[in-house]
Structures are given as structure tokens and as C-alpha cells.
Amino acid sequence: MKLCFATNNQNKLREIQALLGDRFELVTLADIGCTEDIPEPYDTIQENAKAKSSYVSEKYGIDCFADDSGLVVPSLNGEPGVHSAYYAGPQRSHDDNIALLLKNLSGVEDRNAYFLTVISLSLGNTYYAFEGRAHGKIIDEKRGSGGFGYDPAFVPDGQDRTFAEMTLAEKSQISHRSIAFAALIDFLDHH
Ligand code: ITT
Image (cartoon, rainbow, N blue to C red; front, side):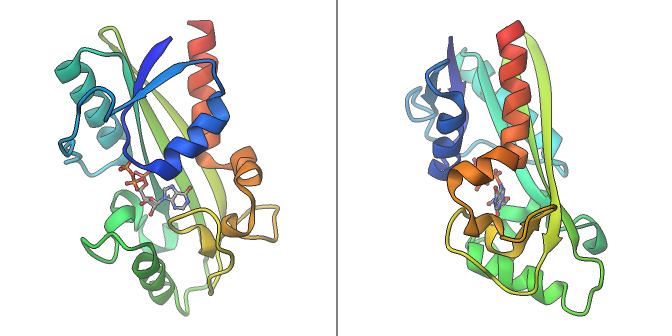
């Protein structure tokens, strides 16, 4: 089945490709000639995922799925949330974002956090949504060099290593993105 995965993020593409195997023929935004920035104007991860999939399916006439993710820290009123990629500014630096997160959490007792992934699937004229969450804690230092984003500061529940100290395969067994994509794949298998 041919589907567009609306992303330019190579980290995500690697993760999803590892999960999907060859069950689906994925084409990327570059493959369909979509080089413009897709607007993500909303205040929620859910709405932005849908905005991306609807933009691609309507403009390029192809079935498509788009994901949007973020780190939610309840003791920071849900921040960085929808702003995760550019929490510390438009330079979108993972190091700057983690530094700001650790600064904002210094002295804060409640270190609970979760990663949230929402996938919006546009199939024919219908939209479907799938969610995955990975709960854990933000530690007060960075550990590990794998992964991306906030991984070096996030220890998932039941683990003693950060996501950045795990291999891609280990992270993929428990990650928010894997859970959301498992739901997407299950849906597609039965559709
Ligand atoms: P797109 O171009 O595909 O939107 P992105 O980098 O904005 O790529 P996401 O929307 O999935 O990626 O995630 C937004 C931010 O949330 C991302 O830049 C990271 O800071 C953070 N994030 C998401 N998933 C993460 C993960 O698995 N590990 C660490 N940080 C993550």
C-alpha cells in the first residue's frame, strides 16, 4: 500500500522504517515534490498533526499520515508541549531546549513527564487519529548520546537508563512513537 509519510525528519524516518519493515510502500514529502514548509498553526499536538496530513492529502491528492510529537511536563503546565521543537528559540537546538527545560525544572520536585505522539491518517475523505505516550521522569543532567531531542534527560518508567542511553531498537520497544505507530499499523492491517 502506497502512503506518504509527511516528514522531513530523518531521525523519525529511520525509526518508522525500522517499525514498518516492507509492509508499506512509504513515500516521503521529497518524493511527492512537497518542499514547502507545511503550516502547523495550532495550539495542540492533535490539531497540528491533522493540519499536516490534510495539507498533503488535499494539495497532492495522496493518502497520507503525519505525526506530531512533544514532551509534556505537567509541573510546567504542559510545557514544552506543542513548542517542544523550538522551546528555547527559533534555532530549534536540542541542546538549548534541554538546557532550558533543566533550568525551568531546577528546584521542582515533580519531575514527571511524558512524550506524546499523535498520528493523523488521511485515507480517502476520512481522518483517523492514533496516540502513543511514554511516561517517565526528567533527570537533572544529560546522559547518553543516542536518540534526539530531549532523550538524554528522559528516563522512562521502569528503566534506569535515559532514552539516549538505549539503542534505537530498545527505545522503539517502549516509545510513544512506537505505540502510536503500532496503533496505525493495526488499523491499516484491518482496514
Ligand atoms: P517534523 O519536521 O517532522 O515536525 P520535529 O523535529 O518537529 O520534526 P516532532 O514534531 O516529532 O519532530 O517533535 C517535536 C519535538 O519534540 C522534537 O523536535 C523534539 O524536541 C521533541 N521530541 C519528539 N519526539 C521525541 C523523542 O522521541 N525523543 C526526544 N525528543 C522528542
